[in-house]
Length: 319
Image (cartoon, rainbow, N blue to C red; front, side, top):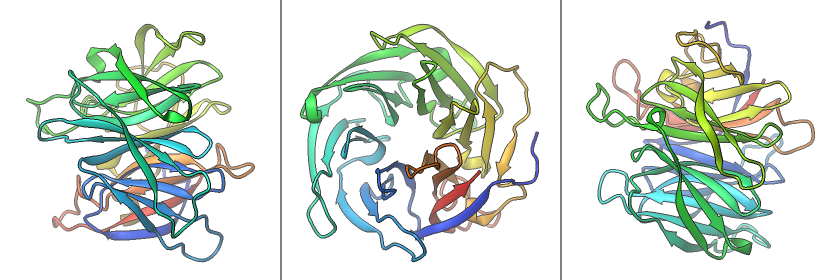
């Protein structure tokens, strides 16, 4: 059910109108790395206390900038894809070790994915040197095995399932299928959203081989979920619903179809939370499960009733 908002939202940074803030990684000092889908950019946001931080553009890409994940301390892998053209898709290595503002970003292309790639999206680290990446329009998950330091990579299909498919002939044909990924290391489940089908699902991960075990399980529906973060201790997921302008709190256990959403932010509607796309936990002591950073697109995928957009935002969310 939808209840009045119980989360506390604070705007950290505003980006201009028509900036599709897509995904983020939180560094150990709570500085942020943010991908911008439509401008094909990567931005750095310094850690902040009271003053508003000044974002720094680190680099641009040839394709849409999508998922980003830390694979070793201060080493990140960034996914890019030509979503609507030839579907060319790449992985890039970003080395932030020893970096400080004013220095050039050390970004290296490490892999071009091959067929059946269609559109990379959310990514999650599931073990040392192993990441999983959602392919929103091929309806599958890629496994990527990385060399030390992410100096090179190999990719293969990890799992394909009907729940991951997009609906190209549906009422909103541009909606992704599988979208966000979040791994629960204590229970060895990978959780994923499927936007077009309005599903939250999970699949068990074998802890030694890191392969998928069994069929995906249904968790909840009714949410056009984008990316998500999970709190294993409280056994809940926090899902950015993007076009539905809310953050939904969902139990991690299998549920029943037709269950209602529990929106803990965005009810009633707030322009501050127009188009939430992704969220990650803060990394300072005592923040996991309590304080997260969320991004918005300012309404690019779901504008205001009059068709207008708002500034995109980076939000600090206290649950």
